[in-house]
Length: 249
Image 1 (cartoon, one colour):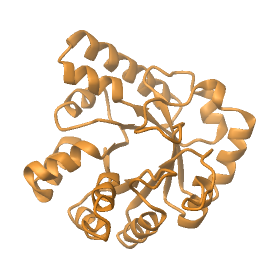
Image 2 (cartoon, one colour):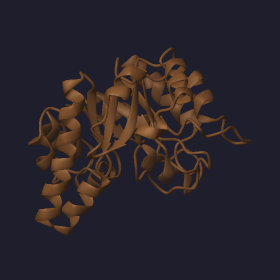
Image 3 (spheres, helix red, strand yellow):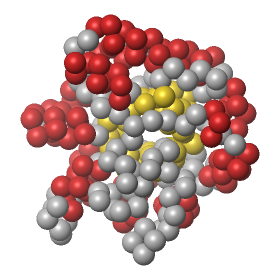
């Protein structure tokens, strides 16, 4: 399983004081040198963490290292004085992977995936246009979503299963809830694999709960941000990277 690290929190920490410290360039470079498979950013319209400039910087880093930048966002996000709009940002940056997430503009963090009814003709047209700009198009879906035939036909290459409820169950130590969420994740995983769709996982994953996920099967990619940055504070960046790579490989 590939490991993509979300650097939003580095941008957030930098923005809290202004300037360029901590440097997302230096942090991204070190992670790639340590063997991370790719980097992720989820810029939001209010630019509270990742900025368009950050996206350009990480794209260059990933390109030079032959790694992948995953750019996440809501395709419905419009342009403003400070934000170019997600689609314009993708056209400018041309990341290897685009992950579409149905977030509201003021949402603190992602908390749900797309439904079947949102995969409309206009959405499929959007996918067709994005496919010309990125190697891979992924969409966020909830665990338990198994009606994937229309997703396969739309040209979407992979799905990312939203693992927030699973992580919350782990935090509570509720075995019944953990088993229920794992069953939902496995159902979506199996349905996607039967159709040849790549399966990614993401949201609130950490060194502990990844152990459960690994029992389901071979996922293609894990996208981890918040917990990884916390563990960098706890263990240092080198040791944290070693621990996460050991866990997913």
